[in-house]
Every structure is written in structure tokens, then in C-alpha cells.
Length: 240
Image (tube, rainbow, N blue to C red; front, side):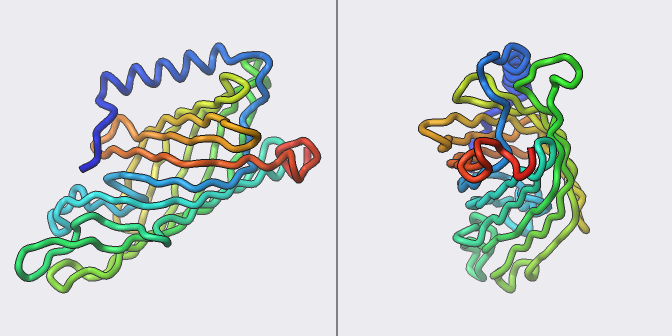
């Protein structure tokens, strides 16, 4: 069972805190980075069109997946990003039913790849440490190894669009608040998320992210390594 960390009242407070933090971001901090590699673990009700939480055929199960992320800055305002999830040990908890009524896990995996722009708020006279991020993605997800008493293997693909405000609030921390709409072949879904990256040493940071404001909920925890300045001569993108 996923802990529902964000109710409506708590969610509003979190959003207000994030917006306030972005508005008062410190002048000495650089903007957020877009060249990184990351790994995380996610506990969630829904993942890119697979939503067993609302389907009794899957015992109203929940998902636990590991995510591998890679993002690359192309220009100072343009980046590409990809995520592979579930390929190590992604599972839908208790989604299968044996003939005797007991349940067992199903396998889930998929990919998401996209391109986005990160437009600095300093273009309109606001904080130079915050960006508006707009991104479009292709998504593929599948769940397999289902028992004969459950539906057959499922697969789905489609697209998502994202809008996010992301900003550096200190030399070590950046926060984000975002909205994503996912339109798959058989289902659509939307999420509001809040997240924080806190650099612990060099380019290595701890990532925490939560889904709020929806019938679904989720929480993600992991690590990111920002390496752009190591390979691009002290900048975050291939071309300045």
C-alpha cells in the first residue's frame, strides 16, 4: 500500500512553499542542470498508462519500479531526456490471481524519451535561477507474466506533455513543481508533481519526488549525478 503523503491541503501548502522558494532563490546559485544520469526507486499507483490501482482484474494493485534516467543538454535552452523503468525488477504488487485465490506479482517495464526546452525566467525580468521547462515525450509501457485467470499481457504506447517550473534555491538544492498529461492508446492520465534535488558532494545529489493532487499517488527516491561541467568545459550543454 502506497503511503498517501500528499492530501489536498498538504499539497496546496507544498506548492505554495515551492513557489515561494523559487521566487526568493539566492543570487549566488547557478541555474538548475540538464545533463545528468540518475537511478531511483518509485512506489506508485500508476505508471505511464498502467494503472492497476483502479482495475479490479488486477486486485487494485500498486507498482514498484526502478528508474534509470539520462538527460543531455544540447543548447543552453534545449535538452533531450530518457527514462527506462522496470527492467531490473519492476513489479505490479499482487496483481495476479492464482486459481486458489492467492495473489502474486506481475512484471512491468517500459521507456520514455523526449525533448524539451528550458527557458530562463531572467528573460522576463524574474529570477535568473529558475526555468520554465516544456517537454514532449514518447512512452511505451508493458505488463507481462500474467496468470491465465487475469487479463493477457498488456502493452500500451502514446505520448505525454510536461510543463514544469524548476529553480535553484541554494548552492546545493533545486526544487521543481510540474504537470504532466499522458495520452496512451487505451488510457489517459495527468499528474502534478513536486521534487527536490540536494547535492551532497560534487555533482552527486539526492532526489525526492512526490505525486500530488490526483486520485493516484506516488513517491520516488534516488540519486543523480550532474556531469555536464566535467565534459563540456564548465558548462551544462554541448553548445553554450
